[in-house]
Length: 299
Image 1 (tube, one colour):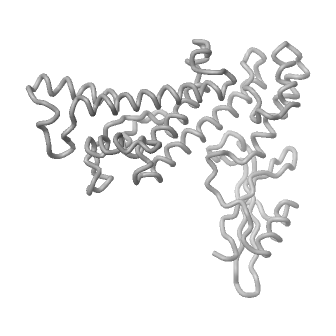
Image 2 (cartoon, rainbow, N blue to C red):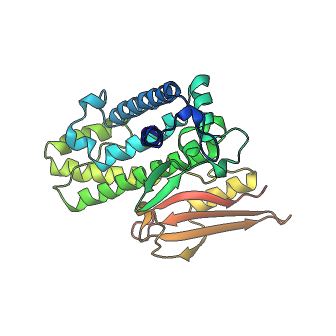
Image 3 (cartoon, rainbow, N blue to C red):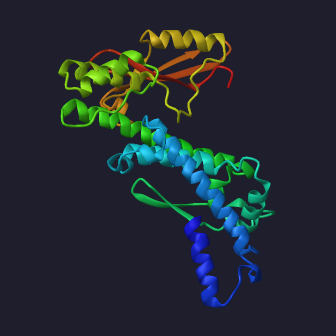
């Protein structure tokens, strides 16, 4: 939004217009003072996001992060997630909300028709995200803002697992820090591995690989809990290996389960109620992962 505000101000001067004199499709009556307030708010939220992203890497603040870490994919992914969260929260600032609403002409208009002000690069494809979806989840576009946050959370999780795999195959690769910051055993293995202990490094990477596969991601969207006794019994059976293979050596788009088998377990009650569970099986170890309900018996 900041580049938009700045370019808008410059364009108005070049055209001999003031921000107060413009109205119409996608334009607004915004004074320089109001734009200054909005700009100050966004800069403050951005500074908070940088500090929060730094804390996720174990630093006290943004100022403490080394330059090479600031440029790393891990820090940048953390930063995008924190920006998404903070820009969706106006934190009781009704004055800022009012300015924002006027700038985007949100009041009384279809959100889909709002001017697209923030180009966000997602993966390799440029996607233009409505400014309201990215910044203003707090005033009516929470669902879209939440989707943006979950996307970056998922990409961060996938990148971390890819980094673990890379470190397993190349001792020169940097070790990702423990997935669980409260895991004292993992932290100790990580410390020893960082000092060059090859055994600790191998144990740490194996441990983090298994944790990544068994931990429910923050971006998860699936139903994981049973809703009936039938569901409970079906889940117990699936965790014991019941079911049939529906795909093998699958490409799920999730690096945690590449080359594994997709399994399905179905139960139908006498009343015709279906429970359908999907999960992943590692053919090399027999380990089972990622149990989720595709259909609950009460659906």
